[in-house]
Amino acid sequence: MNGAEFVPLSLVPLLTGICVAVACALPGNFLVLRRQALIGDAISHVVLPGIVVAFLIGGTVSTLPMLLGAAGAAVIAVGAIEAVRRLGRIETGAAMGVVFTTMFAGGVLLLEQSDTSSVHLDVEHALYGNLESLIWLDATGWSSLLDPQALASLPVELPRMAATLLLVAAFIALFWRPLKISTFDEGFARTIGLRTSPLGLALVIMAAIAAVAAFDAVGSIIVIAMFICPPAAARLMTNRLEHQVAWSVGFATLAAVLGYVLAGYGPLWIGMQDSVSAAGMIATVSGVILAVTALVGPHRLRGSAAPVG
Amino acid sequence: MSIKLASERHPETGQTSREDSPLAVRGMTVSYGQKPAVFSVDMTVEPGKMTAIIGPNGAGKSTLLKAALGIHKPLAGTTTVFGKPVGAQRHRIAYVPQRASVDWDFPTRVIDVVLMGLYPQLGLLGRVRPAHRARAEDCLTRVGMEDFASRQIGQLSGGQQQRVFLARALAQDADLYLLDEPFAGVDAATEKAIISVLKSLRDAGKTVVAVHHDLSTVTDYFDNVFLINTRRIAEGPVKTTFVTANLQDAYGGRLAGAQMEALALS
Image (cartoon, rainbow over all chains, first blue to last red; front, top):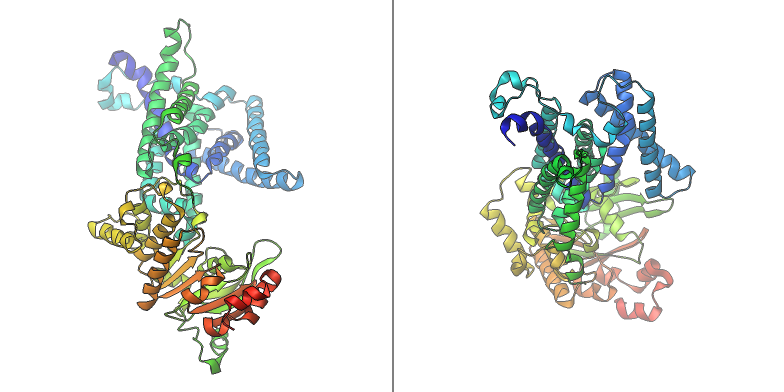
């Protein structure tokens, strides 16, 4: 594919997909190690009604109101989980599952009933996003990357997602040591004066920002997959956190690129007419990567190989 | 006012005053549910000594330590470390949690765990210099783990894990060492290595407090004991405090009379 075709049609979706995948995978490393991976799942479900309500109130799809709506929904979810747990006498895990699914389903209904035809906000969009529609109309080739006029029509999702990635990466880099110490040994972390509760909350907020920003571009499926699959696969490749994070970034990027290409051209290769959802394919590829590392990753057997006692 | 009352508690016995004590706890009460785990406990640790916190399972030994350090939020109670609030004295405290309290499958190496003890010096972004690394390696040598620096922590035995935790505490270069069950589930060689390190700390003027569960080694290892069973039972030198009457109070029917006779000094 030459630049004249690739740059306007595929460059922006590819880069956005990579930004989404890496922005979710970075905090995902710590969420998985803290056994909080479910929080990523929770966020991506619960944000939907919050985003829809924020749109109904504000009338626009922009990041800050959506983030506030998602935060409000998260607070309601926490209260609802507690209520279901106590009033329904149901264990916490089941209560969480019930609340997430109900809120997501409620968000879907709300979306169907409200007039969102003016914006890219509908049920399919909520699940799969609109990665393929991020077409850079004014681009004519690679030279457009240096052309201010062409850059002005760059789909807003890309700079938004790039800024989100930068924010998440800066947070992880700045608080690397406190995050590592408190994830490994929270009690010790407190005795050396680290404020572990605000730090843990900040990590969840970072994950939420990534999820909400990504939601608009790629929908919720890819977000759930990217929080968990690349970090979990990376853990099977190495025994050092520094290397694990690097592997997870590599796997997330690989999933984004491979997923996008397979979704666009894979069906044609096997003789089918239409391409399939890029977000769906990216999530699928990340799952396949995890499956492969689980079978051949060098550190997959560490649990049974380690001496006991 | 309360400080004054506390320090005047036993004027005639010449006990450590609260201001001098490396670790002084007053009225500590902690609860996990309805029932208090620790109730209104006072403790005044003597400086430059090794003190064992002993009591039956579920007596609140670890909880007392965690509440004193601010890891758990107590319902009531205050802690001072060398006469000042614990928050202002973090640099003088080294804490060794129970080995089983962390996930040893965490992706990191032995040397990285020891370097965690240097975080107060390194800060958020300070570079790990050769001097820091040398210090961490020296601490590993002191616990006999110098050959394991590059090992993944999940590949260690229980005793080796405990030694790595002790090395991290040594890296903190503290004045007060607090250990939660340092001998739980470790091999005999590790137990010997740990006690010799702790005694050398004591001989260098440091204060050591350990939650301890093996009554048969109390007289060999420790100078002082603190007996607890939700409430404070007794505290003082092993010779006068580790006695049948106090053990009876702390353990009730859980220790046979003959066992107590054999363990206690009188």
